[in-house]
Length: 367
Image (cartoon, rainbow, N blue to C red):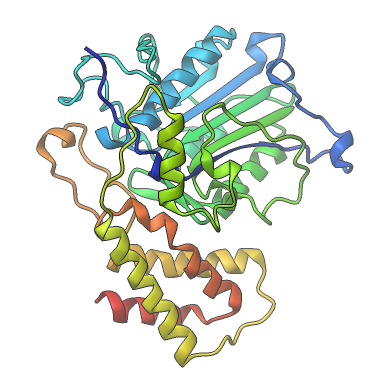
């Protein structure tokens, strides 16, 4: 019996990016650089720290937790001690009623169980933005036996996030981590000299927006995984979803790539189109010279109203048995395709439109 988990590649709009923070070095190419994994991991195992985060839950997001469990196996195989690995996972996949292989999780078609021996430090309702930031900062936490990143100036740090996201934020259960918040957390970690080398992988839709124009440090190298999608090899501004679907389906020999309807996604597209038309037709930009932080503040304010009154990509923070009783409450309809269209809201902020006007338009079209 083969695991029948279809990979909806059309919704894997993620980019996997690796960032090396070499803040101590003025010349980007002359600073500390990472050319391969051997230079990331210190020869002394205790000098390596790893934070693995699956930001989503539910069976439909199987891949995010599978990615994290697989990554756990890889870093353990490379002698990172378990006490230096901090793992976030909702843990509703292995024993999910829809899982034909109880207690097992697979990340590819070799059917190798990547769930086995994984230690999950933050599970269920503890998979939150606040706990993630606490872990990075090493802040004391009132919960007993909660692991924190206790790295020092000679330690190397690897962070991997796999989950949902869109322009300038990534999604956790019950909340978002915005780009400037992640930037501030990493700046704090640097100021406290909590690493020698740090690499961050983010797999989420529009993950590049988490760092674009935000960090004035050097980008020494980009890493990618073998499963980076068709999106990297083509101009995604010109590439249609159907073109991508056809190409991916042709190249995927061991999986069943499927294409399904997208009615709610179409409604999201029309709603944002109407908001943009309303704002640009009846108003003019009034704010000039916005900083990147101000642009992000504007987007956050507008998007918070959009996700509350219109649509959201975020899954709810639910009890651990929610996949059984389905008692989840979302701020607005849960539509993953939101991530494909919210950049238009950011563009309005960048153009200098007053955020109050944008919010008023959101309310008018989603009331």
